[in-house]
Image (tube, rainbow, N blue to C red; front, side, top):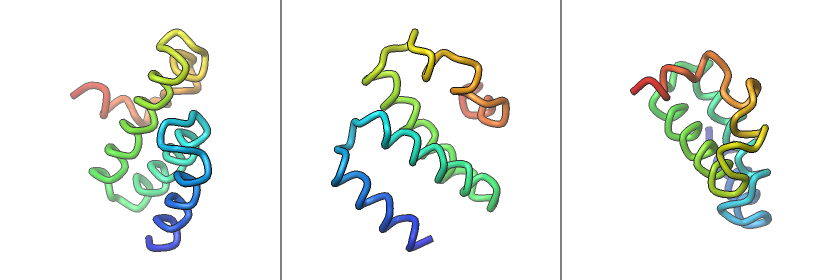
Length: 80
């Protein structure tokens, strides 16, 4: 997925590596990777996105703790 890697690099430079909006991009790429069967890549992207949200917003913030922040399809990652 060279196009998505280039897009992510641009977003990282524009926002910074710890910006909460970057987490949404990472989450979207994680979902794309998951649907393509690249589960290890999907997991690493999702974990990175979640860590950014936790660090930037705190674990009690709705974007982290809310029901929409951690879809059921990602619970396999957190169960490890």
